[in-house]
Length: 107
Image (cartoon, rainbow, N blue to C red; front, side, top):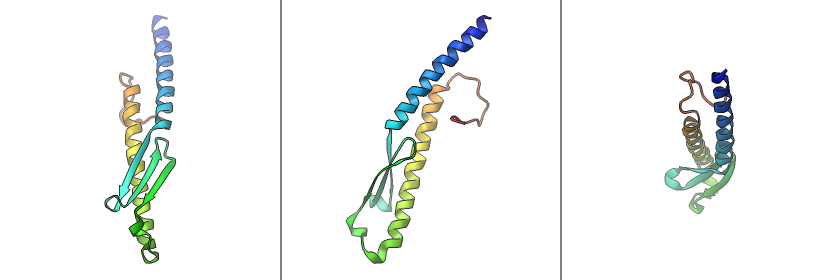
């Protein structure tokens, strides 16, 4: 019975940590860059685009396709950073739990 109470307490603590982490991720902003910093995309920790900066030198009609590609590249860079930060924070929250290798949170 003592083990069950310990598990319940651990689950309650983990829930609190998860909620705090989710709030922290909502506030997190990461930037992705492409084209040597000519295009910058800012994303929240939840993957929502918060901002976009384009160097004025890129805003020529004949360069539209290149600018579009740079925006996609910067977005993907920011998204990768956001996901890496989320995994890092999750590993802090789940440290010490017997989670099978390869299992990722949130499911």
